[in-house]
Image (cartoon, rainbow, N blue to C red):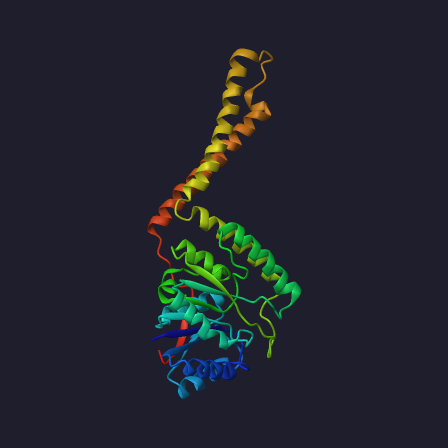
Length: 315
């Protein structure tokens, strides 16, 4: 199979028929074998009913339904696991991503041998406050953190070699930074391509003000994983060592002062330096313990599936 088109969705009943028809028409003209995988992330409208109807009409369309809303990262994970195409292309279901970009993205993977090609919505039709402004901040921070020179890390339309989708692990809201995860997994041949973006035709955006906070927290997580995921002791141990040294120096100072300098008879426990020493050594020990536990967990970790599929069609 040449192409797997993976589409996560939530309450997109008005877009699905037009979207799948457009994708099928475009890929069919290229004489490529394909599949379209629609992942219903716990929709509460008629999205799943429409998906079932589409699957009955075409064996090329496959449907996965989550038992509840787990999030876009988990929907993409399920789609990646089910995909069989040599090239996997992701896109959103709201008709803002243009299916006409699929052939170009496919050729860029196959002919230019890129591991991942990320779309760049250079001209956007999104909310300035809820999408454009936060995206600019996160894209700038992601570039500085990862060293990957992309303008739009979170663009919904991307193309991957199939092996890339099988190796990356998406948790939480990390779909925003898939190129960074791909690089961390060893896939460094990453490119960007300008893609068309359209105004939303139906429904409302699923993102609000909380997008800014979640994106910021995900970015911190991304930075930590990028730097210390393989050796967390390097992070916790360094802080623990600094704290223990500070505590030891204060304790040493108190001991020398008590034995050779202090003449007033004041107890060590009455001095603020004693509490600084005690507190820093306790905190330092806790950081060391956290580092050891993190190393143990890392060596024995098993990534658990973070979603539950209630129904499958044409799988």
